[in-house]
Length: 462
Image (cartoon, rainbow, N blue to C red; front, side, top):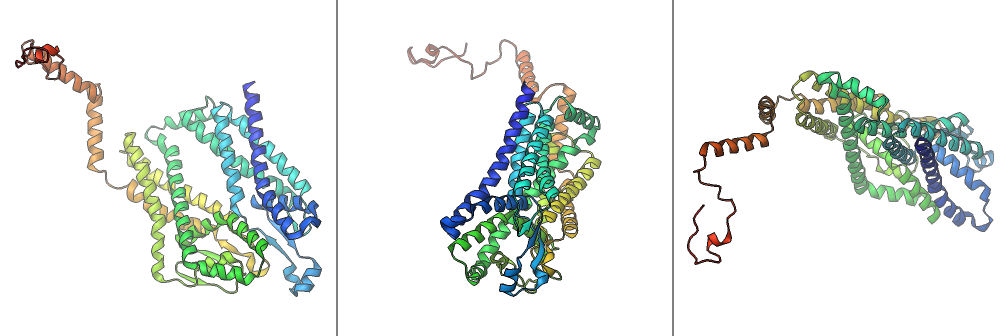
């Protein structure tokens, strides 16, 4: 019965994750739909638009087809009437990923993580199938297979990571425990999996924080350009609200762009363009307000920002090195070298996946290449994190570490803890002193001996 309950709760979690993601789209779209079209709005188109945007938020590319009447009215080329839109707003994807990780952790805590992960992923896949079957928009078509597979993979990845993380830390009495036992059998090398994951997580969190500060600084420095592009768009209040909500959905995507810029390779906003610390080469870009944050020019001194990813790697190395010292496994050099390389490779892999998701097409022609280059960005992050982590992980051992190891070795040889040894030392002194020794000044004595109720004479020890 407990396993059935775990499966039901995991399925409910998946349903809630999908429902919340769709509701986040439906609620503002309903309001904007009402303000834009009034009571005569075609409400039948609201669900297809919401479902299509939900799929797009999970990495599903959209085939945009502009109707001929609009092409003729606007006067654009027929070649630009059809293109692929694949630059994903990562806010929806990250929400699903985190919600799935929470569900996987709960399933692992219940003792049936594999069943919970499967039940939740299957449920989310069925919901994605329902959305793909019913959400058809004339101007934006999503491939049916990708509309089912990609959202399901996102949920499966999050649930699996959350479940395995909890099971590795707390145990599951099954597959993860057997793998943990195998790793423990490696001796000094058994700490590699946990420490590599810990160091990689520290690097990713640090880079996210640095990117957030960089985006905030860009908003402060170039906010005027963003406002000017809003004014140039000549949209009403409904249009401004729509653009603002769209910018918020793309905020995590901007963070990935900021990481790529800080790492050195930078980003592209169209074929043949580059925005990096070494310089900016931009042609004509769309008048989207968020592009006002792009720097117009750069100085060679701006390359100093590549030290920030190095600092993130050094911080991760310090965290992991401190943990190794606390666990008394920091002495071998081989495992520390492997952990350093593992942190660099893990960080590069995560950044490569993020760069793939944060790049794509935003229009026809040259706009088909937008965002960071996954290969160069991951390579730069890997090298910079490797340098930073190696500084702390492979540095000569500090005298505090050596002193702590000598203390631990002495305690192990004595077969007792320092507290017990101190107690034994005090007992030995008491035995040697004998009965005639002066007792401890902290020993209790009757109050009368202190003259409190007596004649006020000076007390003497008994």
